[in-house]
Length: 250
Image 1 (cartoon, one colour):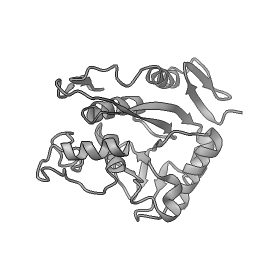
Image 2: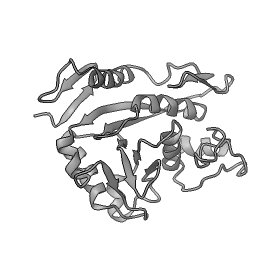
Image 3: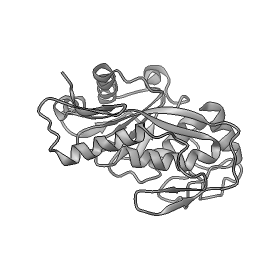
Image 4: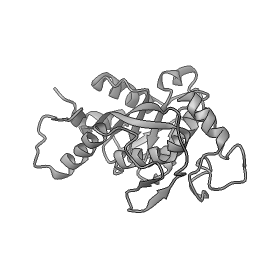
């Protein structure tokens, strides 16, 4: 029995018990996963990327990558989450393209609330640990529950939830912080409804830079750097030193 409302694999959409193709919102959500899974990460133009609000992000058209590393990402939508994971992933790829790193969707799924709500203590707010090397009971229930039910295998795993406590737009478990009981969940990221379009890219930056820093390296005063907190950032650039580290760790 499928415990998700629906999930995608390749070009196929699998519906959970009681779900119907007439649910246009669910089908649209899953179809975006199908489109993303069927697209090679290098198909977008190298000098720009379309974003969900219709704007275009300019990237260096002269940048050439001798090779590109690809990281596979599983994306899981939990009850009450409202963001579109595929839109976020497209924006991530536009940000990391100058570093010659791209991300491709492994498995995308929406979890049935009857399964996911108990993981979050009966509500849609994920209680999290704010200390490195530790995880809360709800985090363990969510991460282990998803893995046990859906056999996810991608290196990165992203969980979309309505909200988290303590509150934040998003957070992640980079290698430097995923120690002790948290080690099993390294390279995971959690994104909430209050996130902005750069939030997932920012968390992937923490993971691939393996750092909690919130500045660039070559010019720490540059507020356009991806690693500057979203409330004060003026852009989403990555400097040469950051790109070298990101490529090495990808």
